[in-house]
Image (cartoon, rainbow, N blue to C red; front, side):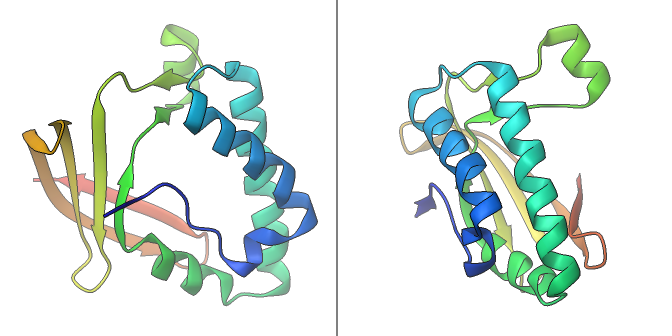
Length: 138
């Protein structure tokens, strides 16, 4: 099943609660201002960096929480992409990223209802020190 959000105990810290609430609202309504979404993402990333300094096990729990299927609601792209097409782009159709953390594979799918129109497959790796996901499609 697609999970709309996964909130680990580390994300429930006070500095993370407000940006997380903003991101949940943006996902639910798909009409929040781009500057608010990007600001919330940056604030959440900062809160998680600070939490990870105090508790390095957060990286491992973040990878574990990634396992499963995630609905793509919006993307932010690189800074250059943001300048060309805008800071936040909401997906007009159902798009899902699925991660299998046992074999480190990723699947991206575009759907109409539950029917996959297009799927991409690849591998991913997790940079534990930076808490960063890197992936490439075959």
